[in-house]
Image (cartoon, rainbow, N blue to C red; front, top):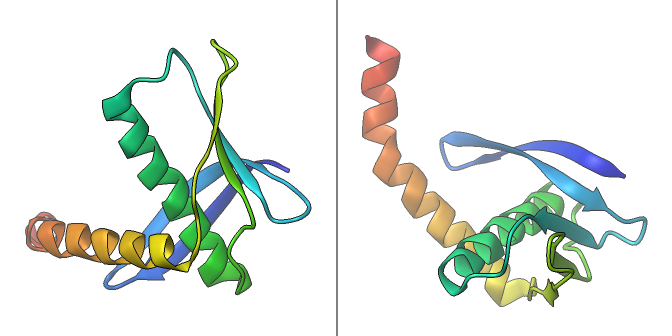
Length: 110
């Protein structure tokens, strides 16, 4: 399945997105353009782990595999999505939400 939208509640926010490719076994892939860059790679890995967390929350099962695929270069990287990685992703996402929450509340009140 391609471009699979998702939404799930995390803390006081709803996290939404679209998974580029969701395979029948639950594995997922995210496509990127350009060449792999170390700084961007870390951000992309966190992004695909957030997608894996969405699958865990929505389906009750984490994906067995996740890959970042760079369409321009043909490079592909497996991204760890085991329990420890997903827990650290959840914590980081909740910290980000807590940081943004005051700003979001002030916008909603205006």
